[in-house]
Picture 1 (cartoon, rainbow, N blue to C red):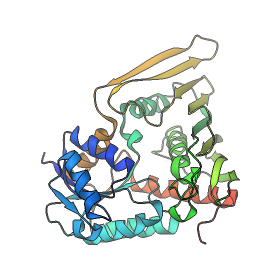
Picture 2 (cartoon, helix red, strand yellow; picture 1 turned 135 degrees about the vertical axis):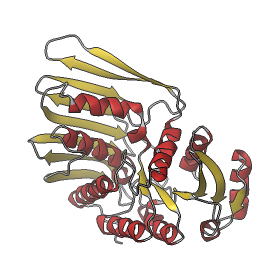
Picture 3 (cartoon, rainbow, N blue to C red; picture 1 turned 60 degrees about the horizontal axis):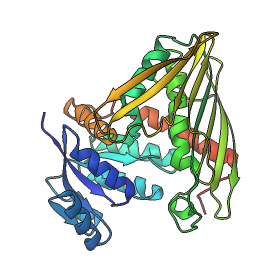
Picture 4 (cartoon, rainbow, N blue to C red; picture 1 turned 60 degrees about the vertical axis):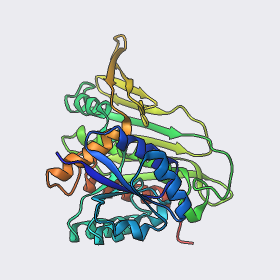
Length: 338
């Protein structure tokens, strides 16, 4: 299978993680990188031995040797560059959240369809064998009937009002940055529990602690799904919490500590299962693959199969996740319109 030649739009911290993933992948190679400043693109290209460096994103999109682009600009710019990349005939992997709201997500998906390019939201954890095992356990009803899901992803960053994480104009706040992870897995599990690839909530009850910049520093939501399944999803960028996933069923429970970024450079991660009244058992998931390389190769497999949606993160699933986040933000009183 021919390797996918990647162009990177933006050179922030997550772009470094992705570049390392490409270098450790089976079916990807780094072809080009672009930044708003030529010197920044040159430095990034030197670090990762990338053949081409561009001082504008537009120039990279014109490179005929780039098959796919990885977009890691600030959230509000995602829809613009998805549409421009699609029109340039480039396949697209875009960092989460795909867009700022549901209307933009529909636009992005429609543009990708119109120009016949693959579009994937970059939830790297969904490509990890840890999630494969979770899928299996839920599908085989190892916990009986799922009743309640608890998912938390939260951290405390330094208070800098101009930073991407806290600046409203840059799409800051915990819900968009990490609440998307908790919502994504809750929707995945709720769907698998009723024999579907994912599920959209019937009801969203959300709240948030707003900080001086107008974004959510910490937030929580209760989601009600078909099948009488409930989920409690928590997140934050200004609050340390105990991160992880819990799933409670009629016959037991499972927990996965710190499941959101498992073993970046490969290694072991565990799922703990406790059936009612019995000692807890540990399932160890071992892989020598780098986390971001799994995402790169999942994208490549879908592309070479002629697909326009990646099975690990289907575009229909992404649209539902963006819609759920939008409802959570509305409930929490967070608006990016101004």
